[in-house]
Image (cartoon, rainbow, N blue to C red; front, side):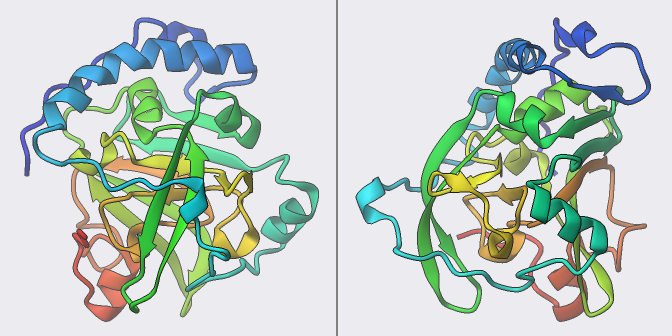
Length: 249
């Protein structure tokens, strides 16, 4: 495991309130959160720069004409289908686990944070690829806001979709969690994320293969190990099909 610098505390975190599960309700609060977090994780980004470079980025002219859905292309859960029809007004993203200040954010909160747009290539383990333009806040912003505890070694993504009777999940280490291109995407090619591509939220971890890009995101969980999660291998396909946990491109 890479020995990372301690994640810094946010000077402006008091704006989230002292409740056990802080909630960001106003866009100005969200903007203040990003501003406070920016300095906090800049040092981490710089420290990791030598360990992992940026994935290639492309121009809008190079975007693929279509971006296929793969794996799960919908969620059968009635709540999801209701929210899909309404534009996800009540969807909540939790940040929990080994954090000092759990968060609960609406889709509006996510969109209110300053965004990172990036045009990158998605490479599937099945052999196809596509270039798409993604937009969303950096995962590092949320982790700094939640004040991840020192004993956390991994970030687990909990998803709304179910495959073969099992809840889908994936995970990454702290190097990828604090990578500047690791974002929580809510838009694809300038439009709200389509259902087949993981609406309303999905992960983009641009240095890894497609099966690591968790869709239908509902929770982000900081953990010390995978021992009590699934079969202990760190992800759905790792558990059921023996895929490699680190799927670097």
